[in-house]
Length: 240
Image 1 (cartoon, rainbow, N blue to C red):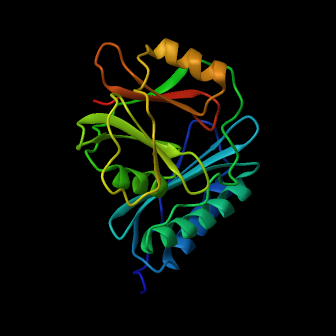
Image 2 (cartoon, rainbow, N blue to C red; image 1 turned 45 degrees about the horizontal axis):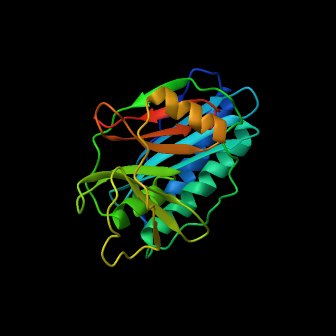
């Protein structure tokens, strides 16, 4: 299935400077990948930022109306552009075919090692009410390490994350039984999310060198996720 010509894609550099030719290369590679795709790729947005030791890159798009994301860290801007285009091609093929677990762990570099407990970004999303199976598909399509949602069967905030090459783990703010007949290989956490303040969560994540931490806010009793960004700093998901 052919796709119509795409306009020039927006490239949104973050505060650290990235050479103009690197931005142009990223635009060209992503445009070519989108045009060659077997599905309709729209609403493409590219972000590049140069860190102290590596370049952070991200592309967001819609494939036949479904949101996808690819995020990675590379040694150079040129490498970032090439790998971002390859990642987009793979993600488009994955969401266009019958679902299966994406390879994990991926070859992408892990977040930068850091002892920082400073939260540099807070996102306050309105959580989607969906089944754990649907949450797993969003986790894979958006290249998340962990996905926060609300499970309508139990009316609890919950997360899914990877635990092995083909497995996923489900955890909730309150203990509950396993979902009925899940289509995804799910392991159920037997414990509720720990009740922690943001400061306590940051200290625990850093002390244990965790990539992310799901916990319950003591004031709101809502689920929260603290995670390590690719630049090594912390970010917080605190639902609206």
